Length: 304
Image (cartoon, rainbow, N blue to C red):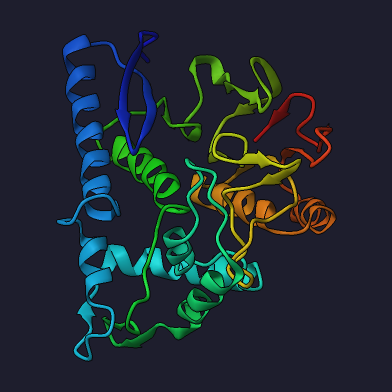
C-alpha cells in the first residue's frame, strides 16, 4: 500500500475544496484528481441556481407548466432525500423555501416587510409538489433550491467514484463537508479540526474520521446584527423569518449527506429541541449555542 499522500486544492461550489489520497504514482494521482474535480464541476453545473443553463434552472422555469418536467434518476434521489429531510424536520428543512431570497438581502442587511413575506409563504411547501411517475409538476412561481443538500451529496458521490477508480485511502473536503475513503495507513483515522465560529485561528473541536462523513452548518458567515438583534441567513419556511436557535453544528455520520441533514435540521430547530434531537440520534456532534457556549459529545476528540 502506497504511503505517498497527494494533496490537491481547488475551488468549487463557491468554496475552497481539497482532495487527499494515497497513490504511489504522481501521474496517476493527477489523473484521479482531475476525474474527481470534473465530477464536482458536473454536479455544480447541473444543480446551481446561479446559471440559467443548469438543470435546476430548467426545473424552476417549468413552474406552472401543466406538462411538468421529466426528472432523471439522480435528481429524483435528491428530491427523495429532500422529502426525508422535510418530514424529519416537521417542515423546517424545505427545498422550496428559496423564494424567500426575493425579499431577504443579507449582503445589504435588508429586512423585508411582513407583507412581503406573507406574499411568498403560499409558494413554500414541499407537499405542494406533484409527481406523475418521473414527471414533476410544480405550481406557478415556486422554486427549488438544492443548496442545503448538493455539496454533501457531491462529497459522497466523489468518495464513491474514487473507490470505483481504485482509491483505497483518501479524504474529500468540499468546503468543510467531508467524506472519508477508508483510513490512512496503519488504520489511522483522518484528523479533522472544526474551526471556531467566532475565531478562525482556534479550533472548536476535533473529529477523527475513519469512514462515512462529517458536515457542518452555521450562521456565522452570512448572518448580521442590526439594532442589537442577530439575523441568521437560515430562514424558517413557515414564518419567513430567521431561525434563532444554535449558531453552529458539526455532525459525523455514515454518509456526509446524512451528517449534513442532521446538522442543517438542528440549525433550524429551537435550540433545546435541536440539542435533544441530536443527542437522541446517537451521532457524534458539537455545537455552539446562541450564547456562544460550546457543547456536545464531540467537544473532546470524537471518532466515527
